[in-house]
Length: 81
Image 1: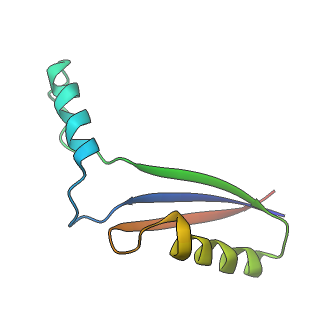
Image 2 (image 1 turned 120 degrees about the vertical axis):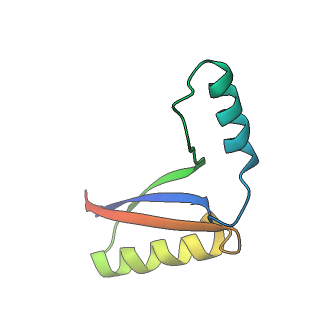
């Protein structure tokens, strides 16, 4: 059994309006040291299979649903559960 931690964020070339709004708000709250902020999505999945099959399944899940591969990049880690 494996736990997959999946992180999805916008690619560098894509404008992230939510991150821009949060950055502006934090600057207004007197955090001038903030220079960059990225927003994203986080998923935690538990898969009852081998490590190889878990990696393949997570890769397919990201490609098909969890990430919009045109605009977002993703990374994941597999941890034995």
